[in-house]
Amino acid sequence: MAEVHHHHVHNQDPEAGAEQRKAIWKTFWILLIITSLEFLIAFTVPHGVLKVSIFIIMTIVKAFYIVGEFMHLKHETKTLIWSILVPVIFVAWLILALLLEGNAIFEAIFG
Amino acid sequence: MAAHVTTPGAVEPKMWLGGIEPMKASYGKLMMWFFLISDTFTFSALLVAYGTARFSFPAFTGKHEDFTFSNAYWPVPERVYESVPFLHGVSLPLVFVGIMTFILIASSVTMVLAVEAGHRMDRANVEKYMLWTILGGFTFLGCQAWEWSHFIHGTDSGSVMSVIENGVRIDKTIFGANLTENQYGPPAFADFFFFITGFHGTHVFSGVILNILIFFRAATGFYDKRGSYEMVEKVGLYWHFVDLVWVFVFTFFYLV
Image 1: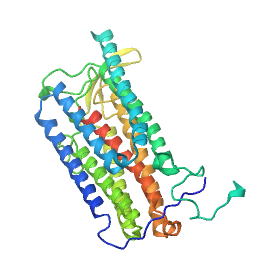
Image 2: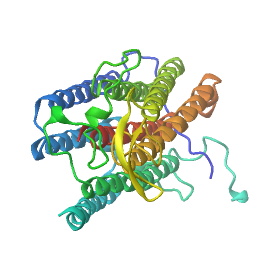
Image 3: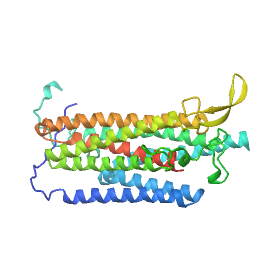
Image 4: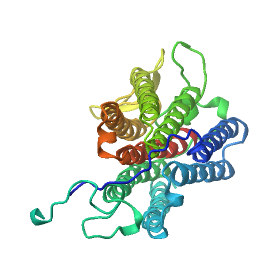
């Protein structure tokens, strides 16, 4: 496969990409704040369904920012976004199905 | 193909050899995305197996202060991971793994800054940010090596576990963990720890190697000659993915 070439304009302007860099740092702060909040919750909220749900939601929010901004998926074509998202939806189903299965094993042994 | 040789640069920008550009992404970038989806399946399989095993074991139901290590129930993670280098005997739950998370997120930021510099053909900044990313990767690996070493060697006094040896149930003091014994809980817990963090660590290691290669090629002017820094972007995708996996490992292994 031959290498595909891009034609970039060699831009010496220091202001070029400034907006993009701003978005990168914004994403960094969002990820940092969410992670710090996770720590806070880990030691303040009692263990239970609520705590686990909060953690899962925060993880998905972090994943959204990493994939959307850092991996730039948010700015790709719709077809590419869906080709990545649809398999992940099936994975989410697999997780749910096997957690229920694990619970059934628990009931069978200890229930 | 041989009859169709073109000089570099004569190809339409971003076009594949069929003359079109599916999903407005170059061939290499799209293939990286599809590789990452397949890698997602592998990591999901490991985490799904972990979830299944965890749900099929009894959970610790007593008061948090009363928790002791036992192979009768799944351990509370923050009681397992509470050590920090140079602070022997001090209980600092999840602090070290928090530092590791921060290092990986920070290295993801420097990576994306390198990608952005690459778009502007700014070689000096690509080099600078790639070096920071490599440093972050090595630091993370070093932290993980320490964490593994601590996990394997265990606490000072170990923990007494009721285990079956040669067909007889005996009480035995176990120090640390390996694939068959585990002082923190059921042996399956340690097995998953080694497999999941180990598989992730292997990915980080490969990522560092790729980052070094990219740095070397950028520093020797390879991408300037090629006229494109897109390789930085492709390896960047891989590096962010490794960070992404850690976000999930952090939640499902250390937090819940």
